[in-house]
Image (cartoon, rainbow, N blue to C red; front, top):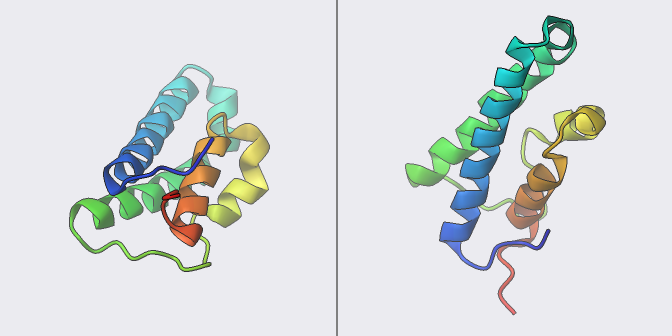
Length: 102
């Protein structure tokens, strides 16, 4: 997945991540055994991704300039359990490296 070319595309990616987290959590409602295992980290991930999105829509977002987003330790640790891991990594790459403006 390539980095977005515009700020609007970047905001859309983060919004998509919020949606994917909501879908993941909904799936956990139907599988209680997975909810016990994934629930704690998905709660933290949800809060951190929503914070990034809220910062963006409220004009508080700041580019990382080489720094990872706060949720990346969770993505690294639990990535194999996150179906949208690639999306989160693209968001982080954009945060660190900027938009893909060739």
